[in-house]
Length: 335
Image (cartoon, rainbow, N blue to C red; front, side, top):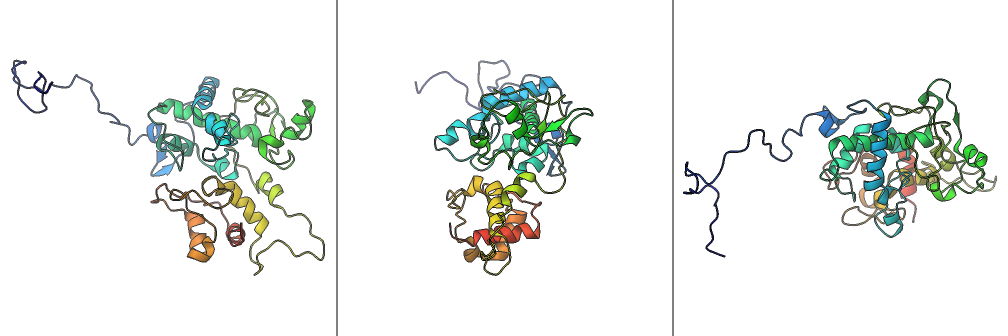
């Protein structure tokens, strides 16, 4: 086997008339990943930032294709309704993020394309398994899932009506607690409104409490809700305390621990775990992080992220100074 007829790179041969073992490339041959840089269709980036909107027209066929690819590649971790409670997560795999969090509902469409392409945290990249056109279709379907649970009247065509998800729950004959296992809270606290008639391709009714809207909402025009997110506002609002009970705030009076806990759950727990223990060395523990690195650094990292970390820590530009006060107050507490 050592002495066998074969071509060696850059060596001559008598097999071909021109004496070369390396043959000219077939006309039209391209290298792997060649010409994949620069265009929005293949990167999801515009001037170095994640872009928003589809690079092609959103149609029912695109959403159907996105649903099919999503159910194949994404549901094991994120579940068919996108709440991060997929079957392998329930069996001990790294917790997956919910697409219905405030942060991801505000994320541009290019963010989802980029994460599918490059991976994110514990999520591997799927560039080899999913073609660019299908990555965009999945991103469009994710936006449709988000709108199905968080739509406002401005997100649906004229004449269509938006109703609360708990009203659909009641009219469908389900119990008051039917949605609890889906969202981890009472239906009144989550999913304030949904489209009332035909939306994106439906997912199995037994697994997802989505409603239907009066026509497909273009995924390239994500919902831009105004004011505070109802889910965060309702969960974070502390119960009215008795006169003799002190409010749930840091000892210094700066920051609301209850609101900080909600911010952490919606934005940080997917990587650093609900217990704040993290998954070292990939995701560091945040137990006692304020004492270790100082409040100033915690605020800076939470707001601006650490783009050169491996994996990169994402920024949270929507965090206000009050939000940072609340988050720091929560991180100062003991788990």
